[in-house]
Length: 287
Image (cartoon, rainbow, N blue to C red; front, side):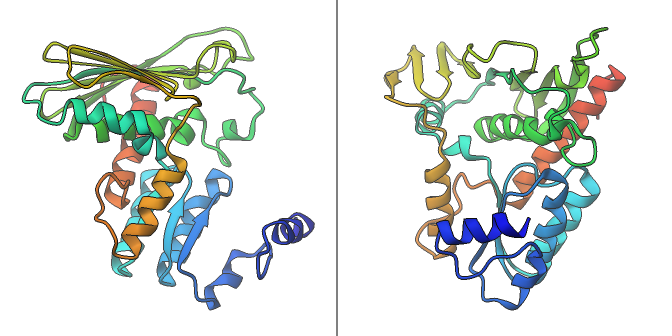
């Protein structure tokens, strides 16, 4: 919609606007930020990488592994950087919680419950071509979080989904997925769209070596068994600004890549999402 592009350009004082992203390929671009519908992410990211742009792409990286691998190849072949918007890594309470387990030597058991209530069946995310569904489109966020927090290689994936006769309910958007890690840790991610929007959206619980930690909606941190104490913030803080600031500092040589969801992390999250969805549909254990 050209009018929308022009209006946004005026609002944010952009030098140019348009509806064809390839027009930018002749410009000098420090960082391309991709926030389109899901089906366009991989194509645009690949094109930007091939033209030497560093990239921040909103989740998901791609809707299938073939496209995700094509993006990764373009990023590596052209020596550029890419992160996916997995901002919850940088939420202040996530950073504090991870420090609690920094010196652990035994496995973690964690759960991540996502109450994504209110997403209607006809939402564009549920279009198989445009959005890919909730697990591919948003679930990758939470699989990445568990991968990052545990910091070990996934070895086994299993999943199941609900079985409903109600036409308004999409069974494949209501999945319990479990990831087993090389270090013995275990993460279970519950994603549902059949709850109530008044109920908190996200709750994380982590257990290890006599320590129990919970994060409620990235506003409240509850801690038992650690010298690091819990905390309650004034507002929900999911790390959007902190992630962008860290990425810019990394690109300008002012920090290392610690905690940034770079291309290999993004590939792994895509792989976890596709395997969990496939395992749930088949109701069998994935590879």
